[in-house]
Image (cartoon, rainbow, N blue to C red; front, side, top):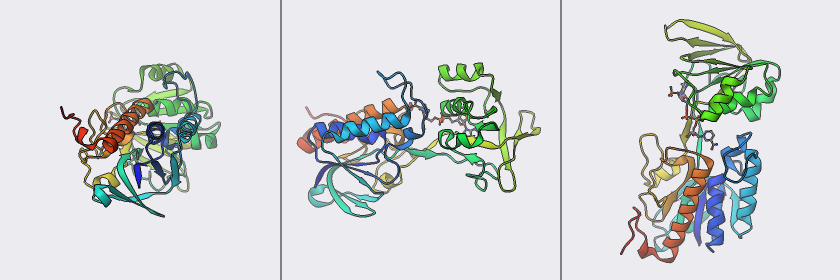
Length: 315
Ligand code: NDP
């Protein structure tokens, strides 16, 4: 019997694990994919307090190492289902390889990239259409490429690609780029980046690999832009299926609804990071939610009467 099982081994999962370990909770982290999660695909992180610049991969590895100092267990295993009402009102976690019991659960399952709906996008995926500039950008050294999206991820992907590509076309559907102001400025000042606003990509063309993009302008006119690659950065979809299936409440965007104690609607079940309904999804805000979740899991395990699912403390 574990005190805490953390589903998801990204930076939030391991931030929760680090605190849980220090609090003496018998803790298991289950991660089926890449240890470290999404942040490992970020080139440079410049907004983790106390560290001016670090690669996403190095930051993740440091947090994982830190958590492992406190005797937590980690298994490389996908979670298929979590059931409430196990032994003594605890939770049963069904993994691909084993079944585990726990007193509390933290969902730190993160999010996946939203797929582009244009014609040809799916067919040409990994044949010029990509979702990670750090992973696939070097393939296009000296070529013209595009980034599609209007948020901070798109701005950062475009800036990273200038290290490889001869020219980067940043295609924004809205009237302006809406990244962090510091990144917007870097984009506008970078001579390798051509910003195309009010352009919607309707089609990705190419026989065996991507050759061009068909964009619709504000007047409805179509234009063709020849590029060797298109990197999509149009937002994220939360990975909340397992939580939702066990009865955890999600909002319209399928984000897990949490309160100030990182609690969900089910007592003993918490969530943190990109899978939740918090508006500002930064690594550090997710880590903060994770630490909050670990503390309240500790309170739940040690003094169940003290905690209620909506964060109202009993007098
Ligand atoms: P956002 O949701 O912020 O932005 C998505 C963008 O994609 C919007 O501009 C949207 O345009 C556009 N878009 C959506 N669908 C389409 C489409 N079909 N065609 C063209 N454009 C489209 O996503 P991000 O991935 O940029 O950021 C996600 C979260 O991650 C944010 O909360 C962000 O703050 C965070 N983040 C954190 C980082 C960190 O911790 N350092 C780094 C990067 C991101 P429209 O407005 O027209 O809908």
